[in-house]
Amino acid sequence: MEDQRNEDRNQPQSSQNSSENRENKSEPVNKSNYKKSYYNRRRRFSGRNVDSSNQAPTRISFKKISIVVPVLNEEDSIFPLINEIRKVLKPMELWYEVILIDDGSTDKSLSLIKDLSRTDKRIKFISFRKNYGKSAALQMGFKEAAGEAVITMDSDLQDDPNEIPNLLKKMEEGYDVVSGWKKIRQDPFIKKISSKFFNFVTRIFSGIKIHDFNCGLKAYRKSVTESLNVHGELHRYMPVLAHWQGYSIAEIPVKHHPRRYGKTKFGISRFFKGFIDLITVVFTTRYIKRPMHLFGFLGALSFLAGLVVNGYLTYLWFDNQPLSNRPMLFLGILLIIVGVQFFSVGLLGELMVHNLKDEKEYIIKDKS
Ligand code: UDP
Ligand code: MG
Image 1 (cartoon, rainbow, N blue to C red):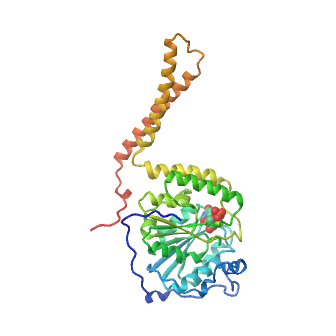
Image 2 (tube, helix red, strand yellow):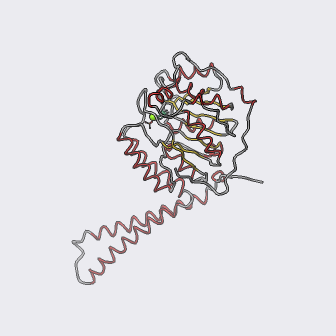
Image 3 (tube, helix red, strand yellow):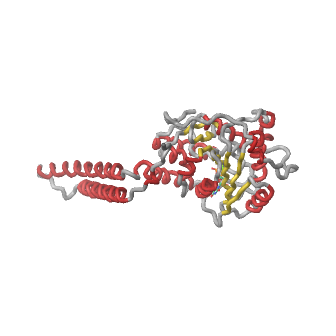
């Protein structure tokens, strides 16, 4: 595990027992149906890990936490997931809310979520009229979240709620974001391989030394979720977006389970979209304030290459060699024109940046 931390990050607050936060109590729904949780059942069979119910409660300094869960057609997973979240958070004695965002489900997910919300005021929900995507769901959840810490997790039982205390403990060390790392990933081979490649490329481009960018299980301080703007399919790049806004990031290995019900919502298109999104992320986070550094550099490179090519041909022409049968001439001309165009785009970009001074772009850490 490798960490990215700021030298002068905020120190964690001291640990405290919050008796006023005991309002958060209620019985698990459908207890009879889910006597043994999915996670614990798997653990018994695999012989790994210990039953969380026997563990001493984890004390953390965060008094209020929000758990944001995007849901798209996960009707079979919702009850077991909520049961497990309750079981994990009950001994921690803190105020919590679970915000379920129904991302345009067409199965029974929404009516199950409504049932849950009716009987337990800690379960909140937002329902989209249509499927807007996981990023939109997370962004909406962030807007609603009232906790000092915000946890995100998938609703398909692949992420393990037993990791929530571990994420929060790590964040208490002073990090702004703690990302899960599906070290032992329970997914089809092709997904594992392509994800390794995707993570490798993102690591190179972003300079962030973590293994797993796209883990659904993550913890954020509220200040981070308030300043993030996730849209399109940028949820894959949350650590990149946060890092380039100056937040510190840590990573911890988390348990990962195979998908038990339903099927994955991201097909093979995820890889193409993923890389196009990487370009968007690199541009909007690194170059948005200085477009000339990107376009000017590319333009100069192309222009110089064109000059070299055509310079060489000019030398041949003086040497009495005809250029009528030299396709390279067109390459040289093309490179020069493209270079000038890149340069012009960069200049226009600079003009726009200088006219649009938006103070919201600067995130203030502290003030007197
Ligand atoms: N999801 C969503 N909207 C979408 C696609 C997915 O809310 O358009 C949710 C989905 O219900 C799940 C999570 O995002 O809780 C991750 O989706 P999935 O398990 O299909 O992704 P994978 O694990 O295959 O990467
Ligand atoms: Mg999944």
